[in-house]
Length: 473
Image 1 (cartoon, one colour):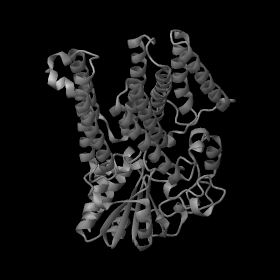
Image 2 (cartoon, helix red, strand yellow):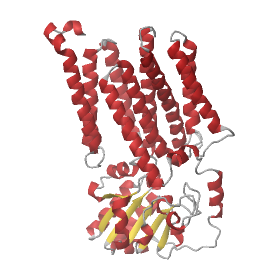
Image 3 (cartoon, one colour):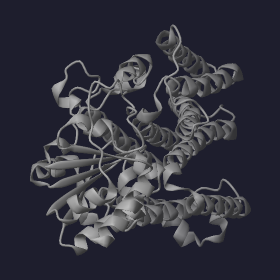
């Protein structure tokens, strides 16, 4: 493309490209910052998209790699697939879509790194670039198959239970060592394609083995970690291509993903090693949940009319959403409940636990789809002091994140996990299909407290009956 530009433009092109890259990086950083709030997330996403468009456009003039025909075809096909997926995906399937996109990002980075090797036939590439290329292929391929596994676990095509086998951790560790040895061999002898292809194969296998022992409800952490890995793979590809924009943008994604992963692990009071290797929710949890519903504890049920009176004549109501709300597609119905209560002068807020749902921010996105005002959404640390001043809490589809065992039972697998202190409110209404335990496989002490009431049934139908009862008051 440079043959079509005047000589005076070509003279300053390298400096101009770097300045535009700096502009793109700045837009990435600002956009990432704005993603931290639901009120600014949409504009932040648009800003980051603009930064990527600028980066791609400028790179086309800086690097003569492909013809415009292939670029335009790729843009059209990719845009069509992305638009179709965004329009058709259900909110409950959003985590699966994010997992798939993470996987494609990792695969793209691995292909870019491998493509650079074939472009130069490995002869003129320095050893440092070959080593980084091996890292990029390893992380990218692992991210790809790991994300496919996460997708399968989330949508039920693969069992959500942890799958373990004897010697799993030593075998995975041995495979990582094998990749390191093969990488050193390949760097020493880049014309030998045997280690190159074996690295790709083992990396793809490791992605499967990496996610296999992780329970389905731990997928929010896994998705966040895989997102980070896809950024690291992109950054590695940037080093191979000597592209500063790709290096920095990949590093931003990698760092943001690691920070979010750390936040979520703290929210569960579990180290990352326990999430990845602890097979949490497996056999021991299942045994712990066997005692649920043994009849030794009593619960109190509530009917729609009683729940309507409790909420409509309250001063303060807090709504705590969980994955069950997403499964029932009840976000619009709970918004209608909130609107009816607000019309009666009730102060309504929403309490969001960091690991509610099946991906980071799942509940925020779900409620935003129902046009819930952003100022009504409160994080756990901000909403917890409000519960003791609250008349009624509506818990919809949440379980372990409101279980008092996390504070009171040292033998509980969730002991020490920060929870939403809903039990300190005057009354708690729990919308639930049955008394079955949550992911941790343990009974929920909240159900048996004197201020707790069970509202059994499908969340959407239960809330619709509550709407009808409130309207009749």
